[in-house]
Image (cartoon, rainbow, N blue to C red; front, side, top):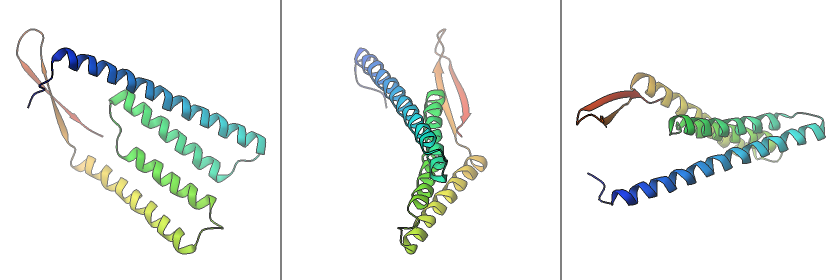
Length: 153
């Protein structure tokens, strides 16, 4: 099933799309770096490092890793947002341990456990049943089609 849009329109649209994508990636990176800087300033002014500060730094690190993965590979593995969610749940539990109801803490812990199990299942699935994407390219010298298999991680 081919694209029925004019090629000139498609080229212009894709150029604009890629420019917007690049601007957003730079904005996300800069915003994350500013947030990291603010967190360091907070730690230095308080003159103590708490567990919640460390967990927040891990969340920032995962966001930067997602940007790096997207820039490098053009896609983000599904496990990166899962890692961020697990860290966010751990930070939420740590921040509100005194105020949270015990049953709610159990539910949050169960949610983190389910996310961790999902990550293990995804990793095992990629190891035992890797999917292969077939990239077909036409060579400039003719209509020969070359197939390249890649395993997605």
